[in-house]
Image 1: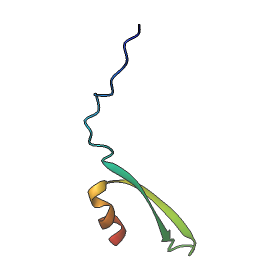
Image 2 (image 1 turned 90 degrees about the horizontal axis):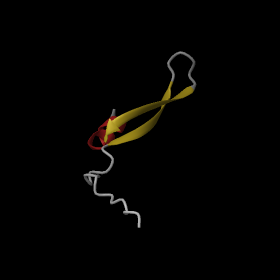
Image 3 (image 1 turned 45 degrees about the horizontal axis):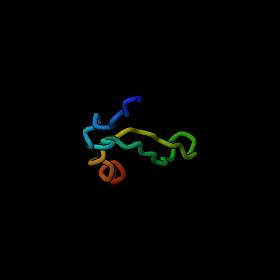
Length: 50
């Protein structure tokens, strides 16, 4: 019988980074563009506050 793989290799921390997408108005054309960035979970609220 095959041995079942155990998922105990994870540390349980989960994801530590989030991908945030912010809509910003371009100063040149006036059109809206999307800014994508990977930020730590703790800094998500600070990213949108800027």
